[in-house]
Image 1 (cartoon, one colour):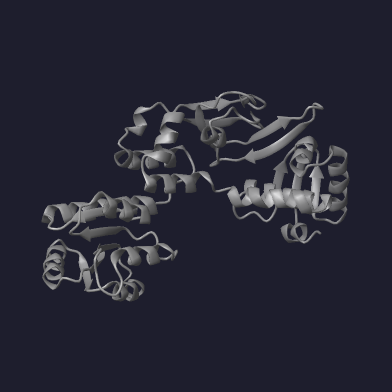
Image 2 (cartoon, rainbow, N blue to C red):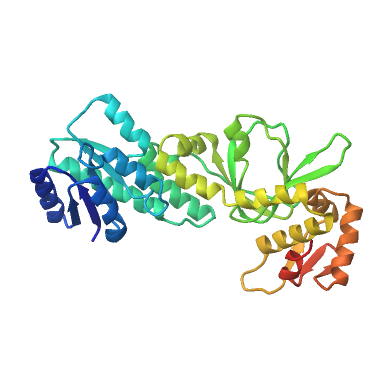
Length: 351
């Protein structure tokens, strides 16, 4: 049974609304002011809050503002009740993050429809979607009703690329977001001196190619398959609709896209401040953890010395020397292109 916290200072309105909600099979806790509401949120753990705006002690705007600052309560769906219908009131509530807005007096069906809609959307946003084509299509299917667009009506082709086949070139105009279903991809830039610099590596479940679409500029690097790959291409129209037509959908979609932001931040900090030996060790550890099979104590990494040098930001000769040192320290094994990480903790302790 879903739980609703009702915050309403008018006794008759509070009693009538409580009765409506309880008859609709909701568990209801009703309080008369904002301060009591804040105390009860932590104890009652509501699935949704229905809150009047004009109240003594603390008004509805204050309640929403305080709840939105707490990670534990910020995502609770919030519906305002008010006797006012001025545009300024509507705008202020929505800017604070209200999910819906009902003007009193309201019809019973209006209230129940708004609550049912918000609860359904919130459940969808709590879902965890697999980082593959099936998960993407499940997300699109559940999102289409919220953005007013039949997202699956757009063609989202699944394409196969052979090893060393280019997905896009630096300078191309971005028209699609890419989801890597299986295989490995690298993105790289060619410097003026002709040397290649690896900008990123992607494995199955990773999205890539969206930065250029957001900035509305040409690709700043090229993408090539490191091995045979399967990609799903999401059209630009779908990508932009998911980001700009619904705030909740956008929040969920951004989380799906940005699972590597912290990882990229650490890479940049390492490049700026760490020794070459430490950067090589951390890059190997990062690659091993990204591409390792679950439950395996050892991790095998297939990467050329040039690609590794590009990620580390140094010359291939320096990388080869560092690998030899790490091998002597029994932290890794080297078999041709294959590097086997033997000791994750040891690599992470290198300074």
